[in-house]
Amino acid sequence: MDGPRATKNDAAENDAALLVLQRTLARCGGYIAKLVFALSGALLVFLSATLFLQVVFRYLIQQPLPWTEEAARYALVWYAMLAAAAAAWSGQHFVFRWATLLVPERPRIVLKLAVSLVTLALLLVMIVVSWRYVQFLEGQTTIATQIDMRIPYSGVPAGLSLLFLIYLFDFADSMLALRTGQNFSERHKRDVNVEIDLMKKSLGVS
Image (cartoon, rainbow, N blue to C red; front, side, top):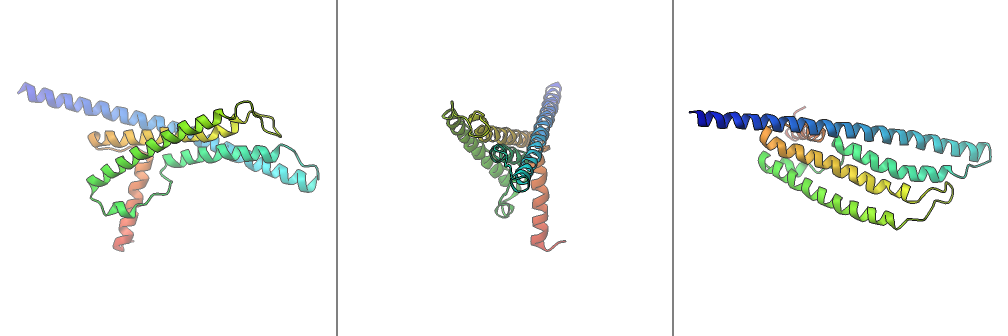
C-alpha cells in the first residue's frame, strides 16, 4: 500500500514543482515583455519628438537640423523590432486560426507546438545571420550623427533575439501545461479568447 501512495505523493510533488517553474517562467517573461514595451514606448516618443523638430526647423525656422532624419530612421529600426517582440508576448501577431478550429483539441495542441518549434528554428537562423551581417559594418559610421553603424543595425538581431526568447517562454509554458493542465502564457490566453469568438461567429452565436 505504501508503494502506490508514495508514487502518487511523488507525482503530486513533481506536478507542484512543475507548476511553480511554469509560473516563474511566465513571470520572468512578463517582466521582459513589460521592459520591452517601455523601451519601445520611449522610442516612439523619441521618434515623434525628433520628427516634430525636423518639421519645425526645416519649414518654420528654415534651418534644418542635420541629425533628425537620420536619428529617426535608425530609431525606427529599434522601435519596430522591439514593438514586434512586445506584440508577440500578448499574441497580437497575425495567425491563421480558421483551419486549426477544424482540428480536434489534442491534435491542435500538437500542431501549435510543432509550429512553435519551426518558428524558434527560423528565428535562430535569422539571429545568427543578422549578427554576422552586423559585424560587416565594423569601422563604418553614420554620416550625420557619426555613430557606429553597428548600433542602429543591431536593432534587428536584438529584436529577433527577444522574439526568440519570448516564443521560447511560450513554448516552455505549453510543454509544461501538458503535465500541469494550466497555461499562464498571455499569448495562449488571447488565442483561446479569439478561438471562442470565432467559434461563436461560425455558429451564429452573439
